[in-house]
Image 1: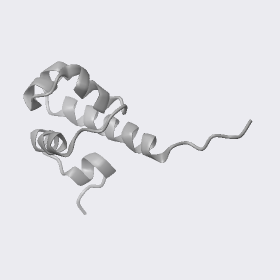
Image 2: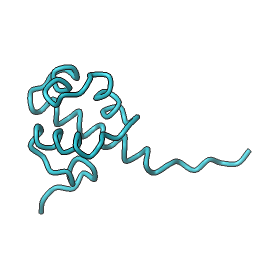
Image 3: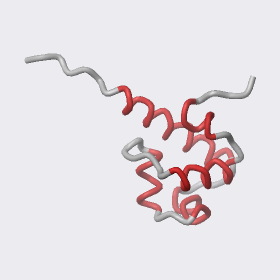
Length: 82
């Protein structure tokens, strides 16, 4: 049986989701539902972003970054200014 290579995009999605969750909590949004409402998303849709199942659309990504006061570069790649 051939060894399946891990999809690198799934690693990025999981890391993105982890940063998203950490920042959401740091900003005082204790629940997925509270933050989803703040950005105008359905909670289950937003949950798929934090769990790394889906990427948000560009306009949603921009709303998330603005609401969490972080750059898109940080959310997507984990890069901080410096």
